[in-house]
Amino acid sequence: QSALTQPASVSGSPGQSITISCTGTSSDVGGYNYVSWYQQHPGKAPKLMIYEVSNRPSGVSNRFSGSKSGNTASLTISGLQAEDEADYYCSSYTSSSTWVFGGGTKLTVL
Amino acid sequence: EVQLVESGGGLVKPGGSLRLSCAASGFTFSSYSMNWVRQAPGKGLEWVSSISSSSSYIYYADSVKGRFTISRDNAKNSLYLQMNSLRAEDTAVYYCAREYCSSTSCYTGAIDYWGQGTLVTVSS
Image 1: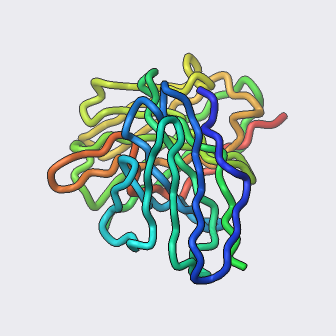
Image 2: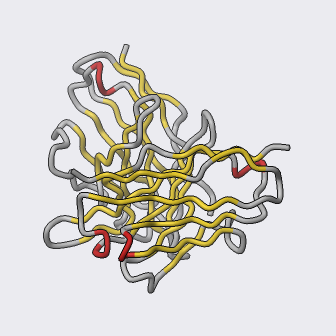
């Protein structure tokens, strides 16, 4: 159950778009469409942003989108806003009937 | 309003035990799979364990298998995590978390509500 691989940090200016990658294996990300993305502000509980690779829960801005190609999932945030600055985590179902998170990516809005 | 309130955290010596509880309210607890997810200080999220709505399916991370036991009492709207043989690396905030379900489906691996967390510190 190795953690999924995410970049430690990404940054962008307000209004720009950024993409956070999440790389796993054929036993997790590549094998199932059960990839979720979470946003976590300091001292707060995580918030679900994307489920099943590309679906947004009700209430999540359409500036957030998800996709997957092979063993790599991606979260794209368009029209960056100051409040998007947070840590982002991906997670995936695995062939062992378990779940695994990525190491997390710190997004800085310049 | 959905609420998940954890309790039972604290300071424990290596090799000791703790039992975490999560009191759920504001939704039909017996209809949802539940999870425990932990976060070590300054670190990322780590999935710990999941239990299906009727306790028929239970899963554990390799890091806790054989030491932790998840359970639930649907009559009491409560989720539990019995933690034995605790190690320093188990030190973390432990979150009780609910699987995301819409009006028609539940979504594997997606969590829509989290408690505020309870801190477990394993230290001599």
